[in-house]
Image 1 (spheres, one colour):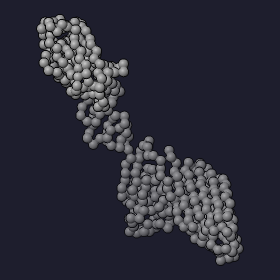
Image 2: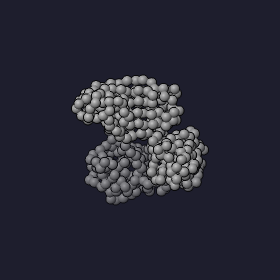
Image 3: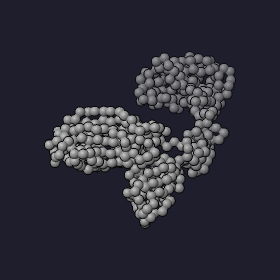
Length: 434
């Protein structure tokens, strides 16, 4: 594109007609700029088809090339607006061997110089004559006369038969269509619409808020139910008198059956409220969130026999094949008299047993179990202040259908006032990702 501004004349080109008997010429004088604001340097090639000038002079087909330096252009041309029939000039700007832009000029008679904007033709309609189209009036320019316009129009999306106001989609043919539906509907990626939370006709997750558990709250009953099974089970948030209960520590869930542990038995007058979601089969939910089954601090001992410093009971049915349980633990030794022994049990399986030295002020370790159909593959690592790193792998055959008790124990190597303490432990369940 170019911007045209008035400037000094640089070059004049006259048509090869006798000035005495020929038509009076009109001067077009201007400064041509690039879209960047820089002056244009190049050529303007002006061509025309035969026409009869206003003084009845016959103007033959010809062309003239104008050299534009520093943007300055000046040329003298025979007027075309009073020709019979009226004609126009085709002006092609060429720079560095490439055509940059083409304009059409309709030149009126004038005794003073005109700007390009004075002769630049606006919309027009051409009539096909031999050998080329001629101006017939102030009408729209044919699309075919605008360089690249037809190709650009063909590349844009077209209006489809269902085009209209609303949310648009691109149909199989590349045309734009409006999506039909209710104002409250949601649009799916396949271009269909429907109630929000639906996909292909399948209802999405539904949510249950503040449901009262079924079952007698009498201080003795520990078995309760939800109206339907929470799906996924990890979505259940269970509150007793406004306090959220911990799965594995306060209750276990199997389908829609909620089993409270004895220490957490609901008492008469307690309020039990459940919040959960239910998803139909095949509805993607994303990976289930890890669940903290147990977490806390333990006790200390100076005993010379193994003493349980902390336990975690995994309720039956909590672990399923494909699940993974991660265990972390920390012990500390207080005193400088004797060493100690610590152990971790996975149900009936001794997971780790190691002896700490007097200088072992701190002991850390972690273990994990990968659940299979008939056993859990267990791996464990432990280390201390001076206790070397050790790792092991073994199988635990405790049934997943029964409670599995994780037991953290310790004892002193000899009678002493030293103590060994279970500082903290955490047991996390990573459910299977389907």
